Image 1: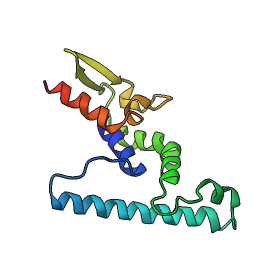
Image 2: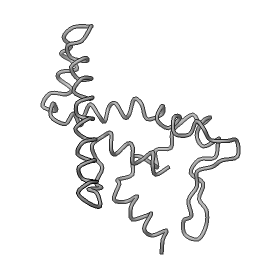
Image 3: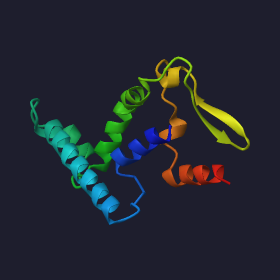
Length: 141
């Protein structure tokens, strides 16, 4: 479940993790540069693609053509369910996503790990990353 939220942060350009060392930082920069190139292509296709110039799209993303944060956010909103299903598609019938919290196990998802759920749990990817970290660190106490 945390992986899903982390993927959302990375795609949206909101990942706070800087890396443990120079190699991690270089890999993170390369990943973000690749994502920027991907979203640049998406932006160009949306604004000047097969359908021609789209002023509504240009207006929505005006001024956001360096990192494409708004487009990335919109892409995540449109595709988060597909990402969730991709992560959970190998889950077996009895598998659950759960975590140990306050001395007890809390179930996050129990319907074949999300495959048959109608809504992707928003308590995972829309919680700010630093709060998820605090919660994770508290579990270790």
